[in-house]
Structures are given as C-alpha cells and as structure tokens.
Image 1: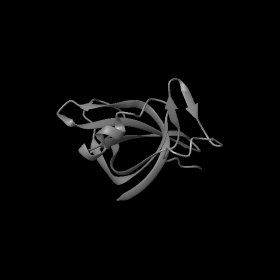
Image 2: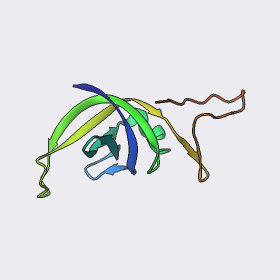
Image 3: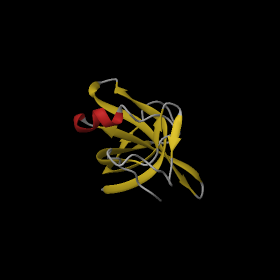
Image 4: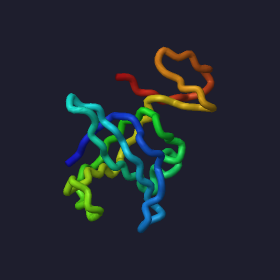
Length: 116
C-alpha cells in the first residue's frame, strides 16, 4: 500500500544489521492517541539524502507500507515499515541552527522545503 506520512525523526538513519546498503530510521507521527512509530527504509538511491537527516528533523516520505513480524518479544506483533520512494526534508538543521518558515535564503542557492 502506497502511503505519504510526515513526522519527526526519532532516530538518525543507521545501517541494517543484515544489509549494509539499506539505512533505517524511526519516524514518529503524532496522532490523537499519542505517537505512532514507523521504520523508514532508505535504499541506495536515498542513502546520501538519508545521511543528512538527524534526530528531531521533520520529514515527509512517500513509499510502500508493509508490516514485518517482530521476534524480540515485544507486545506488538508487527512493525510498520515504509520503503521510501520520495523524501522531503521539512526542516533543515545546519550547525545547530534549524531553519523554519518564514525564511530568507540567498537567491543563487536552491533549497527544497515543505510546509504544513
């Protein structure tokens, strides 16, 4: 199932133990009942972009949602996983400074932001 979700990165991307070519991060999506957590997987096409994402960044991803069984004894039987096919970074954190809307940037540089 194709989904589009936005939320805060709860854990910076790291390599999967069984496949070093795929990075995985945790994404928290705020709901009326608290937060829902999704595992976000970045394939080779998104590795460079994923390496710039840090904990606390706001991102929006589009991708294929699947559910993987958990074998760690957790109370939840499945983990929601989104294989990223499109990524937008909504906050840009640089040198401990977070830029948010409204923002004035130099015209000679191209930036991509999303607004909610």
